[in-house]
Length: 306
Image (cartoon, rainbow, N blue to C red; front, side, top):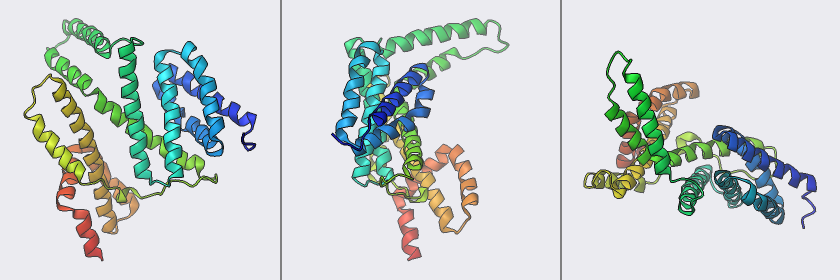
């Protein structure tokens, strides 16, 4: 046993886990807000004693299996998974961008895998049934409202839009996972800064760049999507892949735009201000990211600077 870990520290970590589970059960938003603070205590505990970290996991896991709902139990497992991944990135001296990738992958795959397992075991209702019930109720409300509306609503278009959102649910879960990962990593950077834990290598947003194979994967997926039949599983898979890759290229485009502004010796405030239209105009920023990867504009600018 590690003498550096006191009983009080273990109790505080368990208390934070309990608070996280309670708030997550009330609202996912509240759970997301407190997530970095709970992870901090778990990462700190694992950094000082791996034995005590897993001891808290097992001691809370047994009552959690019998007393908590299936969805809350999933958030509990994701919490410890996130703590393990973050601790690993810290001990391996990984960069902040790579940490974001691993944390996003852990959250997205853990959530999707957990939901599929719970549906398969019958712990929760199939999401397709939940969605169909919601869509029928929502369309019924629209039909009732349409009787009193001054203009006719295109309920068919609304229904198709809802179907498209549900089909793209894995992609949106991945995007939400990235936002949650970014928030968690940035908050942990602030919380861990005064401690002795060596933080991730920090790079300015202008230095963020993704490998070129992302572009190849996007182009291949985009072309293949033209030869798939709408409504099939393969079509849904390709659609989800394209949505995620579009957001990656979008972030890449924003990063390059910020890099370009800073290379022109613009003030930080002015550079951020110029990014606002690009944040809003996603198609334009997406094209910037694609063209940067095709023509390697960043590399050309850097070579010219040298």
